[in-house]
Image (cartoon, rainbow, N blue to C red; front, side):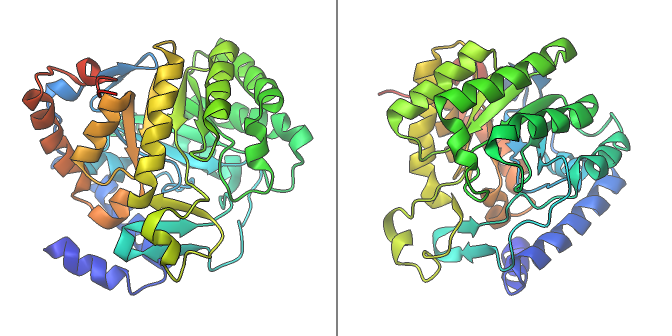
Length: 353
């Protein structure tokens, strides 16, 4: 009830103003420590990417764009936080307004455009982050808007070089719909060139590197992207980013014509389908991280059974509030036990066709 009231107040504010207030609250929560942090059931522990996750639940990239709100999010119950997308040089992103709520559909449309303060500022904040009380930290990197695609490798490598000391894992984001031409990097030739260079850079560092894909790829293109990820030596695939489609009833919403990526509940069927296909194509060679339209424990469980070793949320957190992670951590073990699973790993990929 308290969150329902608070959300009504926040939703009367500009979305970016509301985010700034939430960020301030998370800093305060992080500074206070994690004494009241929910302790995940042992059945939720996951060994993935060579790392030990206390639960599969994480915060997706896009919420923390380099502010490094990691301690606050960890205190709420998130086992991992993906910071980013971070570009080598600071950039303001696209003109405002660029973030829109669709409350009737529990959805957002954003065209933020990788707004962030660059690797130097993010690196300074990550360097100050204590090792204790932070969980696992991922860093999601991208290219600056004014960097042509034929030079994209330089930007991704520069971001990796600057931020890898503080990252438990790294993610190559080439699937945002809000940077012109970025999604072209998912085609085979540029994907091979980019991923190959990034994997070569991180291999001596011993850090996992994943690639985040779009839900709008044709099935054959998704298969090809997964094949390239495996062949290049990537550690995993994140499925999926936001969609440029406006499925179902969203098409009739007054905001449907806004350019940008749609996230939240309407994205779930597209993201789930892409996840299942990516998992089938990977055939156990690399893990899949599920994200896109996860609004509650049932959604998270469905992604795990569809093939996700880890799951991430963002828009679900906007609508579900600070207690969302706790609810998922409480309900997910019950769903596992109901179906006879003793761990997350046992449930991965068991959804019937």
